[in-house]
Length: 235
Image (cartoon, rainbow, N blue to C red; front, top):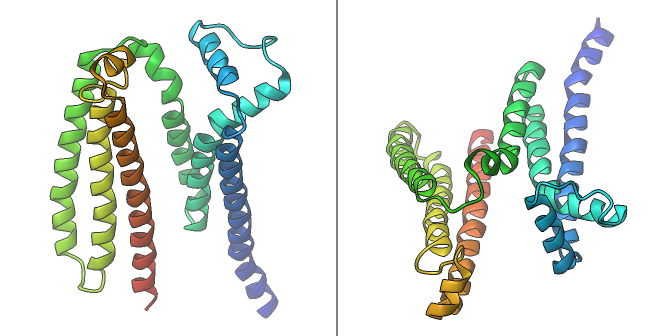
């Protein structure tokens, strides 16, 4: 009887161990992908992107080793994020059927990098960016409205963690706004000729640094918020 109980108790532990191993592998792959970008030559990467824009497969035009490095840099982090998402679901002891469904959604989101340019083209479209901007605005307003109602239901011990996560979301909203300004006026990131003509390149560089800062603080605050949520629950 005791042996049967001990064997059943070990199953979720071994499953958790496997999830932790895969989580570590995904995290390592993402880190290597980011670092590999530091060693890619700009001309090679630009040439690769030009070939892709011409709807030509770059097979034969690049050395296989170079192709592998480019593929690792291009897809390592986003695919690693999808894998990290799946491992997180495993660590939360979610059902395998639910994990598969969520991974499908993850791969669909990853495929947007291919689908969006195919569907909406590579030309600058005011309607696309305008509609997307208003959808983001509406979603932000809605999110904070429901966050207020969610926070009202929390205990005093749970609210600091929720506040930290909300500050993270606030940073993401700020970053979205500055990305808009960086891409169009006043930085004209999508119009380099205007950027040089109006002499706003130093401003554009500063705005790019601001965007990076918002993303850094946003992810750090979100991570700490989730950590504090777990700490409160474990008390």
